[in-house]
Length: 332
Ligand code: PHE
Image (cartoon, rainbow, N blue to C red; front, side, top):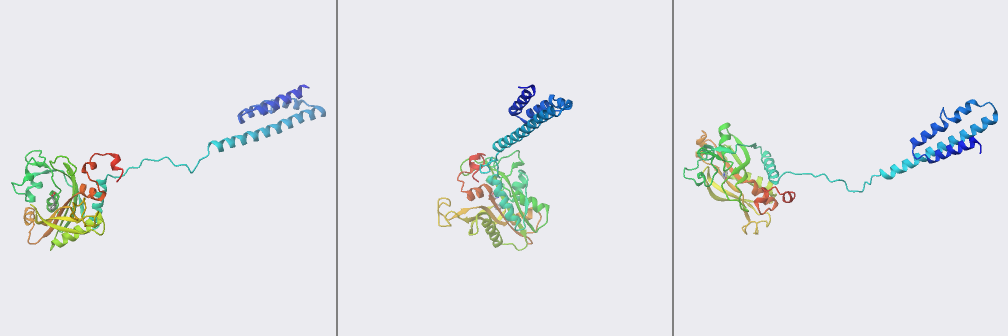
């Protein structure tokens, strides 16, 4: 074998065994580059025979190099197609998405229902004075709610509000009627924690003050709101009751959605579910805020949000709404 045959064989082998495009480029520079043995020899060629020999070597090596290059590119493409394939049929990675607490959901539904009736939505203080929580709402000095056994007192004049009704006084003092407002927020009572009671809970409080309002307006309003909250086939009924700041006072019931009014465990076989308290604004309340009860009339109502959430979702134990257990809350 001549030196050149040996050289060609060596170069062909290097080309064949170059495993990457980078390695192949190195081989090309070494055997076919401007300073390669072959290139230098070609430059020195004087006779036709050695010119043909060396050009032949160069052509064969260039062909082999091009083939190898193509081969490596194909392999690279194959590899990428294999490795980077995306199976669009695989399930995606699940991102945890939260949702609003059931009480917040109900709160927003209540807001929507009343905004639809043209009511303004209010949010008042939770630390309230005895004056606004009791006195101006015409609670008698002997009313049991004034006792520190029922109510959280900070001192003689400050309490955690026991109801959202002080909002009635605040708005009546702030602006002249007509007034249509709903106040939503937390209230506090000294109750032991049980399945049906919790010392913190939420109420929504409605107040309408205008000329010539009657119990029929109260009933129509509550009927509309109960149907928004619980469904279009609900009915509302009134039972007489007593509250210091309404006269007459009533307790509204909504027909049971589980049995449709026929009687079941949820409604204790009465067909009706208690919704809270309501009534026509007591003349004494108007006097307490400087309005003439001969000129103005009004109705008010208060309902618990927890109760609303429980009824909507059939949640038997109120504690579930305060424990923050995701296994429970995720269901709503
Ligand atoms: N504040 C009363 C309660 O918490 C409910 C109520 C509100 C009654 C407005 C009448 C009018 O029991």
